[in-house]
Image (tube, rainbow, N blue to C red):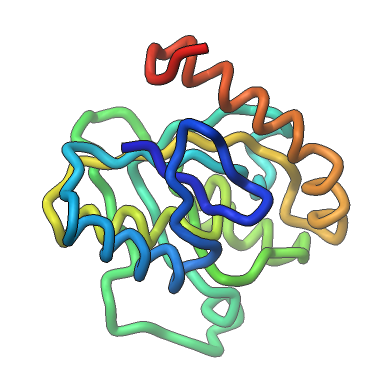
Length: 178
């Protein structure tokens, strides 16, 4: 089953599950209770913490939930905040997820130093729901912006083309037709 966030990030080949960590978790859980899929593939846009360039396509099976308050040691969590379905020895790009978009170069550098590669709002929820239901899962992302002061402006400017690139990537992989 191919998933996407929703709102302005929809695809005719994907099921929208909602924007952000909460709505995506609720809606995907509801769907899995009714029709447990064999595999979950999330497709969406992402911001780069500096290593990946705009329009890069990133595949990942590892998501994290590192909130910005953690960077300044203003917060901690007692929960496991990394979920991975990665089984191979290759180093996976870690997709950090939050309900907030990073717009600080300092925070971008700190996230990169923690090993985070890109950020997307929904992927951690997808991976956690998949883990709970025992469903193999992964994600495909197109970088639309860097996580800096221009994040929103660049996202708006690059989002349409990112959706085209994602569609083409999935066609090349044989995951969708036409």
